[in-house]
Image 1 (cartoon, rainbow, N blue to C red):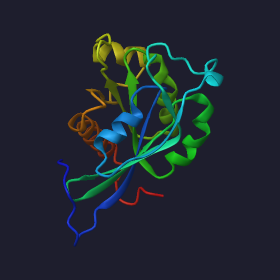
Image 2: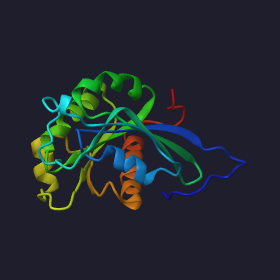
Image 3: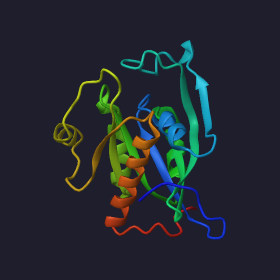
Image 4: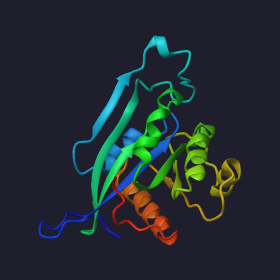
Length: 197
């Protein structure tokens, strides 16, 4: 699969993809890096008022947080137009997840290897919905390198769920993550036709 421009005479199939994960895992960064268009972001500044609920351990330089969603778009070959919806990572904004998940083909769960436990709620969410997902290890500079086997064991993932390494800042890396999700969803028999709600 390759990414590229679409043929104006043949419209690609629209596919909805979620980018989920814990607070500060890199969701906004990934959507921004891969989007062909200027991404929509609903970020607000972190304030002292939220200091008692926003755990900044490991992400001390983070200044903003997504309060609704991120949105971007990318063309996969000439066949598919992926609409990317980045979910908010903080628990107090999880009420929007059900709406964002409607009609989604699947999800990428971004995991920050410095705060691996923060991806557990996202993994649980998609497992309970029986929705295809993969785990993408966002390997930040200076993060402790865990093996894929160690991560699979820590999260308790089934062997059939792919785990890939990525750098959410790089377009080519994000692209490979999205291709892996598409292939995984198709192996599970999920069709990309009519997945947008």
